[in-house]
Image (cartoon, rainbow, N blue to C red; front, top):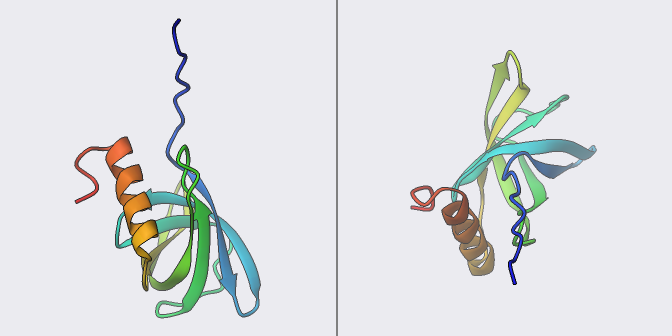
Length: 111
């Protein structure tokens, strides 16, 4: 009996950012244990802004919902607005899920 394994692209990951003025939708395009880079069409935010982020890791289906801080805004010719966020704190469960996901997509990335 052969088992078929479906490969799933790790990125982009749908993202919700909760701000005081409402929810913003974006996509996580790079992910590390410290934070992530997201793309979004509209960015009414400034560096230093703190907000809640929420996204689900593909394949392992772990939802990461935690506070984050906006570090830097980048303009990108093909990807639009890129936004760098750092996590304010991660639970042990979230940290382990992120490490497992990063190791699965790139063995050297979860360090």
